[in-house]
Image (cartoon, rainbow, N blue to C red):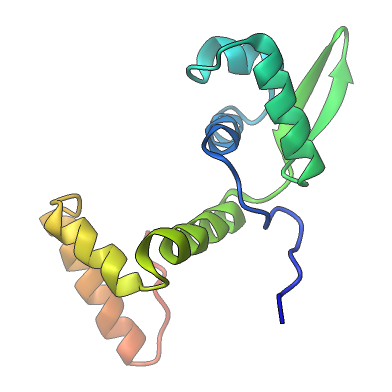
Length: 134
């Protein structure tokens, strides 16, 4: 049985993630702001289309101010982060968090400081606590 997706839980394309990350950083922005600052969109209309898709998926809302629409995220950044991470682990690592961590270590993405924090998180989780360190 497939689980029903909640608001903001639908998978995002690379460009959708790029726009949403930009909106999280700025708080709110117009399509022109996104086009000018958020990366390599081929056209202004591509940005507008991406924003409409994000709105349809429940990730952003817009408010008209003067002659422009300002878009802002509707999903808390931490909620989006968890959803993206779950999708990443499922799609790229076969559902294995161990494979994800192994890649972080093998590719030397995780620093010594990161590894020390991971060890502490694992000890805490084993003793019945939760992670909590960011």
